[in-house]
Image 1 (cartoon, rainbow, N blue to C red):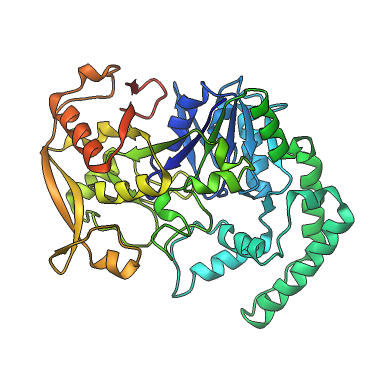
Image 2: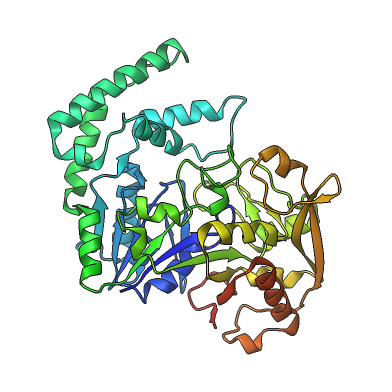
Length: 422
């Protein structure tokens, strides 16, 4: 029995989709434990590319069972579209996908309120998919869960109560048109009919599997620095992508978790607003974005790019308990003669001892860099560590020492085959 948590170790977009796909081959079950359709996990197999928003990346391994945990907020339209996309591509879903009856549903008013919030002066750069407002209702104990779909009377009562409240807000505060309650009830009743076969008591399912000796991989979305408790608040997501969220988002007790695996991009990127000390707004940043194809899989938005931040990743390693990592997009750095690595922050000339929790402090922080030699070599077809240029090995060794982790996988391209395992 083994239970491994996979976490993004930066601000998301580290390449979790590809790495989870690779690791999935060694596990019986893959569980997505938080987030929603604001995540985009990309997996490339040969010439085919799959972008998964809700369904775990393990679905592309035919012998792997996949679970959407209670910590995930589910957009019905996004889920059904994803199921159809996979089935149209010849991926078998039936009997392999399980959805927690305790997962919360994203409602039309969540998306509307999200877009209203992002149009104001206090926007934080969300995807506008209704994720935040859905989590707000969840913690206000007003949410609608998958289990509510199973009782149409309860479902109808909850939708009517919630929409009455939201319509008052939309009409009196925002001067907008009211939502049509009957249409929404009909939509969610039809959604129940479509997903009823997948609804499961997930904690019971997973813990029974562990008792039977099955192995489980827990897949997080976004990244540790977007965690609502440990990230660069308020420029964060509304859930816990850190390893601690894996237990609450799945129903697997923390005593059953055997290891934590981090995904680390060989440089740093961020989508949306928020502090980013190593951000490059010059030609180097443009080159990272262009060569690395740094555009959001969910939104298409260009990502902000910068040098690797070992100070940030070391903090992420600490709060997640990361032991081993996969380094992704090492090949993108092949285009630089000199590569900088941030090894600490200074504020007013004073070096910080630990990663700051105040956004104002992070915005004032000046990165302290070490400069390493680059390598002018194409890495995309390499399959063995010994084939890497000396400078690439030196870079990997340096960031490993600075961030305090052991590297076990190196990704040198987007495809499943472009991977070096140590």
